[in-house]
Length: 432
Image (cartoon, rainbow, N blue to C red):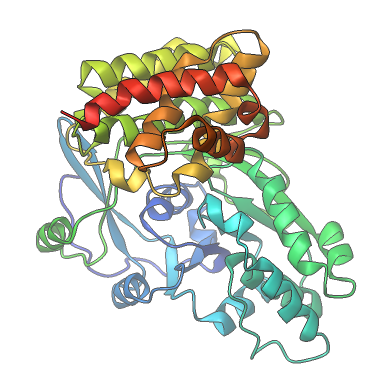
């Protein structure tokens, strides 16, 4: 349909069986959309928790969890009302979160908490906090990290003897389920017996997610609110993809009816998406802004940016299986990037750039150098990031920064020299 007003639910809300951490636009364009389109959608509702702020949770609560998803193509908009979110809470509502995770009816906890949250330096504080809470009521415990809150919920589930559960990471990290397992076990280690219980009762599911969902400005939200009668609209692109590897011991929605692929070999799909889509985004976030551009569609229209993306893709594709349909995927990415009606801000993509570089650019550069090639395209990505971030230009500081991204590359004099050479060329852009 071309337009909606939210109205009210036309059928009873589905029972809560999924708890989501990190309620935002992407969750609502992706997992919540897939759940709404599962063949058994009436059996799977979501209780979603924001990172911390209450604003979005308040808006969705006022709308009974309903929101409008606007799929924006070059030809126009298609709007759909999504009803898979049954309850929305601020992330600070820890008692409700703990109760939801501990409920025997909950079978899945999903996460979009950003890459940086898996290595939060404050996690050690939560480990100590949880260790000190042994034998006490959990209602007053207040972890400071997302992983700490999750572990608190798992401890409550253990005490309630509510059985097995699946944790599904939807963040842009390779082997994100295993990264989550490591983070959870590290925080849980201070609670006697909890790690053993987690090993026996918790499945850590890895997944590769893909759907460009830009952050909306206040003016855009106001305009869409006027048009659709919705205080919490989401704009996304037509393309969507989700590949999952792992077990669901307490059941799952029939997501395959909505196009989800289940596989025992996630790594190639994961690498294709992280290196080609996210890697190109990281490149454009720096080089595009150096050229004076603000959005992905503007940057990819710049011949120099396009050449840099194609050169980087050439390097990355040497290390991906050809049966992944790389040529077709690259062409599809260019079409997606060129969609002028998806205003994907380069500044937004550039947040936490060093964390993103480690999983998007560094693996390609290391493989290229190991194969005896120059990795010049990867070096240009690093150089553009150094320039846009205002990092030092002398060899010592550049070498140190590269070593922080990858000790292997930092010790590689040839790669450091390639970055320095590219840095001199991209610095010319800042002088225009």
